[in-house]
Length: 616
Image (cartoon, rainbow, N blue to C red; front, side, top):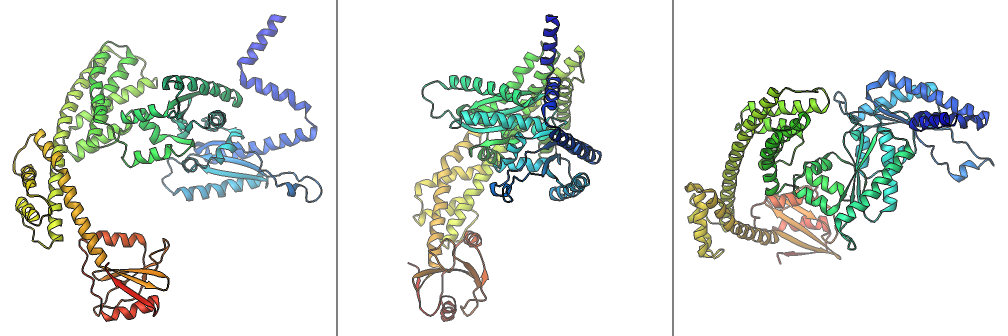
């Protein structure tokens, strides 16, 4: 008898869902009949709402959850001498808008709100649906608005087909535990993987925690990572138990210094983390990283590119003796990594595997026309095979098929190796052409600023600059090596040397033009004193820009056409951005000639008590 009880107990523990139901059932009889009736009534209303929503929008609904009631103000509950009961039933509806193409996000949201509000009103006027698009949820988190997560963490799921609500709940609970325990050290808590895109296909919930280790002195960084990682993962088990989430809650812990090292080494995992991750908590670190990546300012080092290229050949050698899964995976990455390396060498940040095939075709086949389409097809076939094995669609493979895949991959790697040389040659040509053209322009700008005629002979033009004592004559030899970039066929070493040793010359010429332009701009500026304030007017060819109060950052800026008689036309509103753009566009400002008519206009703007100073 005791043995049967033990078996029954074990069966109950193994079935958490059944255990929860039995626990609820055992507690319900203890509730007052009135309260039980209210719970049952609420459940029926929410089931009716769920049914109506799913009948209309089934494939777009990612989750429906009952939100906690809003806190009532203290006075409101006791105005009439008795506590006021909160009647509002707040329900969150998460909608997948990833394939919304026929209408804008705002239009889609407004249409959904209108239709779901009507459904709710037919059931109970106190039901208040809160429709949120998946993109809205992501954007609110990018903007560090985490209040919705706190509400979801306290919500009761009504419908959760892809466990998105459950994932958000367990992540919020775990995040709260981690930040409370290690608030000083947690810089970012980020949701990664497909779960938070609403297209989850795996059994995992993936999050990453970045820990600041820069001020840790009492232990090694490896020890810190291991200790904190163990504690944070144990909190993950606890959070999963609290929320009753069935999916595997996978937590990756990074320390800040290792994270930067991974960026430098162009780790695809880290680049994917930055691009696709959604911050659930951030102390101003993750979003700047993400922005730098989007701007293309996080670039892999040459060592990282070499590492990607070398990896292909090593993995092909390993692939020949492996079993189905390992062989397919090794062959896949053997072709993929050098492809990513080629795109990085071209100047593109490490792309995802899916993007790699597309970009290879768009850039090297269609745009640059230096790669044959059949090699893109080889990579696509290898990727499709790998994905089919990964998803279980292919359970076995013939040796002849593996042999063909290996041969195709080896041919592909040989072609990618040749592609590297093609990319490098084109990059070198562009670099030398860009440098030569930049230098020619810099020389021309200097001569124009000095009112000296520009010719087609670079060396003669540079000698004119040395005659003006702007640059020493000994640098003529340097300019001859720059001219050789166009005149002679140089080796890669000679080109790189010519660029490396003469970059400073462009900077000298550019700074001279900037100084000259700055001096001329000062001469084109009229300084005005009226009362206790100072104003400024820039006379730029046919347009004058007027700064009413040069001592104020919020000063009004206007502009007016300069008439032939020297006076100013009608004033129009302008801005600091427009003024800076106009100043930057002027190659060399004209000399400011002040005619009598302008004095009359200045009095209209500043009053009769005006003192004027031109230049310094």
